Image 1 (tube, rainbow, N blue to C red):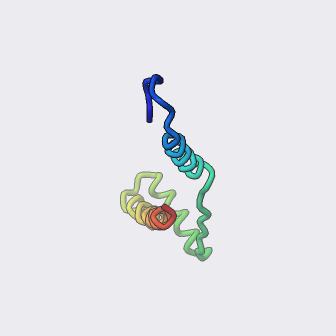
Image 2 (image 1 turned 90 degrees about the vertical axis):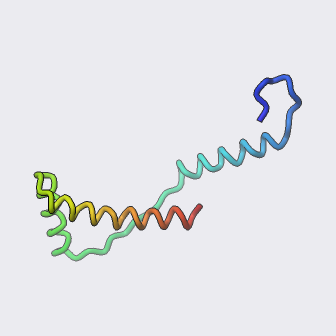
Image 3 (image 1 turned 30 degrees about the horizontal axis):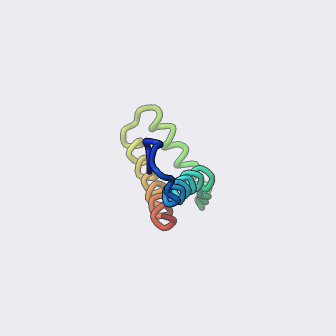
Length: 83
């Protein structure tokens, strides 16, 4: 892209800028919907484990991190598929 201002206008610069702005807008406007299917018993257990993790229980923290890892893996795959 021309930065000095004394060079001729290049229409390709405009196309490049347009593509970049489209990517920025897409990242800001589009998103993902995540749906969790979990039994009530498992949900209760997960909430209890979360409480223990917040309270400092290292095993509970590791279990929560494992569950979070599953979510991030799904997001990573969704991003890879949409890019």
